[in-house]
Image (spheres, one colour):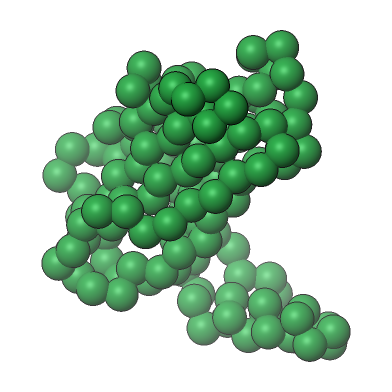
Length: 134
């Protein structure tokens, strides 16, 4: 089983993005979800019900832009498809700003069962980026 961490940085200020709310979810039907996404990309109507996501944790980044209590200590994640939503509009509003992306949503796949996965977010009012960290 794998572990997971995240770190958010506000690139407009050059500081950690502290006070940023986030949520982690798991896709319980990954093959149905892939078929649903492929149908939408091809411009056809997806068949069957839309696959649902299960919420695993919610949290708020600390002064260092990290969220160590997103999941209970010792939580291990099985291979699968996960989604992390960062509530960027609330973060920016709390700072008297507005932005273009109300949520930075990152969908990623855990393929190994014995690795650490790190999801960093680089955030500004009009853009965001991410990569697989270490």
